Picture 1 (cartoon, rainbow, N blue to C red):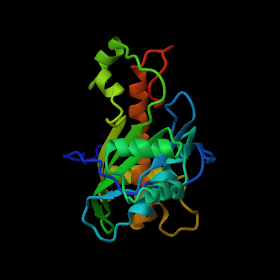
Picture 2 (picture 1 turned 90 degrees about the vertical axis):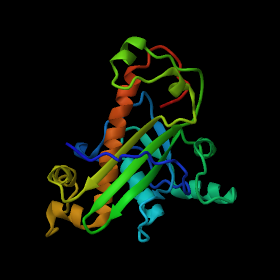
Picture 3 (picture 1 turned 180 degrees about the vertical axis):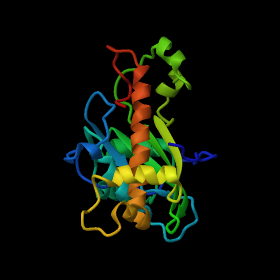
Picture 4 (picture 1 turned 45 degrees about the horizontal axis):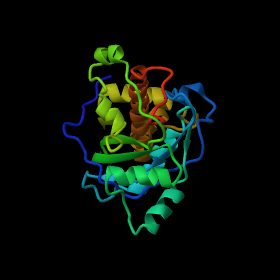
Length: 248
């Protein structure tokens, strides 16, 4: 699958923390789940989505709810209630995350292992087109991580000791642009829609490119799947039998 990648990095200057949904992946169909790359169950917070697109109709809170909902399809992942994070930010007199350090502090305060901060760079509900970035920040827990240099050398972009030790750097990042008129995207939408589409829908899988909230769900799901794939690669360079500084 070829998707156009965002050419410039989106800074994390976040907006209110909210995370939709309930608990780890309890969805029945195997086709809807995303494999868990972590050694243990994880809890995530999700920040309200940043709107860099200039589209006034974009709803950051609703978009974050959809992202958090799709995150619950990852096996072994628990997603904290959105209201808990929103309330915390309100108590701080803030409506958004203001720095990576703030993101980590909020995640820690609400009891999450990590927080996801996402942004939208392009948004066209009629085409549809969604440009997005997802960044993950982890809460430091215990001892420093050790990296296997042999595995690291085989990585296209090896993880450095600094990047593993600096909590203000994102643990991972995905940047994508999805255009619903491109055949490679619609092929993926069909696979996504197959176990989810209502049998009586006259549009069938096309509903997922006609209804923007459904298309956005697909975009979040695909980006999360890619993110978890990256996480599996990243964990491959961590030597066994060593305590990790970060649970992620």
